[in-house]
Amino acid sequence: MSRTIVVIGGAGGGPVAAARARELDEHARIVLVEKRSHVSWVQAGLRHHLEGLVTRLDELDEDRRQFFADRHRIELRTGTEAVRLDPDSHRLVLRTAAGQETLRYDAAIFSGGAEIRDAGGGLAVGQPGVTGFRTKDDLEALQQLIKAGAQKAVVVGCGPFGVDAAVGLRKAGLSVHVIERHERVLPSLSLLAARAAQRALIDLGVVLHLKNPITASENHGSQTRLTLQNGSVVDADVVILTTGLRPSTALLSDAGAALNADGSVRVNSRMETTLPAIYACGSAVSVTHAVTRAPLWLPQAAVATRTAQIAGHNAVVDNSKETLSPLAGTALYSVGDVRFGRTGLSESEARSFLGDDRVFVVTIHGYAGEPWVGGDAICVRLVVDRQKSVVVGGEVWGKEGVPRRIDLLAAAVADAWTPDRVADLDLAYAPTLGPAFDPLQIAGQVAAQTITGEASPIGAEALALRVLKNDVVLVDVSRPGKLGPWPQAALRIPLEELRERLGEIPRDKPVVAVSQTGQRAYQAFRILKQRGLSQVQHLDGGALSYAFTLD
Image (cartoon, rainbow, N blue to C red):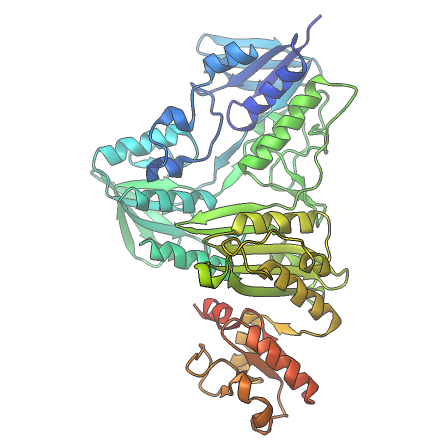
């Protein structure tokens, strides 16, 4: 007798889980339930449609009814909402336009997705001129507003969806204001990377209102007037809500499933919930973090797809269960033509989890390709656990070469590589792909030297605080004419003259060598250390990092 597999949720993970289940069980009855009028194979790429890279909606996100019926023989039930789940009797109560019905299942896969958090000021998706930025429905609503003459857009929230909305709308020719209740954009990035992302947004012409939430909203004809906390007023033809997400898990919670503190469904590595014969996947679940081993809620397409594949497999295969290994939480963002990658723990997360004494960061400003063939600037950051001598996080940003480097750092975090292992990577070399000694390898080398004491970097934020306290001497060893954002009191001694001018450096205060990228400062540190200065460090990331900190 064939089994019945019911998949709850037709967006993102749900269709993937249903298709995977069919691949492994040709005879099962597989039912995909979705309360909206259509399923959504993907929930990303809306920005690329606004930019003109995708010209037809069906290219971005096709209606999959015929696809499911013809290729996978999956019973698609759109316009059908799952309202109650009884794990004891293996029954699901459904609500349709015709009324309620009950569906018995042998295994269920929950893919409830996520929903937008409250934006404040009384705003909600569905109000006149207000949309989200996650689904095909959102895109269609936004297109109608633009077609009707919308020219001024306000994006509320500046996480990944907010950045995509802002960039897409600017490329579509609208003026864009971004309102963010926190003090920076893309909160999963370090302060340094977030400041770089802010600059990239500003370069695109986006106006940022940071740490300034909405307190009230009013409709004035076709416009929405937003009042911010500081009293300023912003008018918009269209408002896009991207104020962060929360897991949509009420159905499982009401059935007695255990949830994590953030509201995501608690699953094991096989995507099994705490309820019998019920699996969960997609944006509803948390996975295990590779460093902390704690639940990590990461609502992004790659994680949703992998968890869905595992849930679909395990719902129909009893004798060989697939499992998901701990993940590093890798993410890639695109702001204009600048890409930002992050993986593992950020600096602040690492310090919170491991403690300040165990964590240090190495920042290398270099080039994605050889400068003499037009290589673009790139920044690589490593977050290192000093005690275990392992890489626990990393960031890369620039116009070129970011994905391949952040992918390597993701492997470094997942497999607990030492900095030496990163420095010894056997990377493919071509002048247009990277220098002979890649910034990633340099970061690994400097991190390894920091552990042995051959290097002693101080972060830009830490140095800025010490400058305020006036308890440090800055020695700028940049080339003549290359002045950084240092106080006037900084000693300016080019590296080439440092040995002859050692007598100018006070010995009664700690000394920090500084330069434009940090490379000359490191060389100065080596000289000063061997010349008898015991309290000496070099600025991590140089003037480029320091300028972002003061920005």
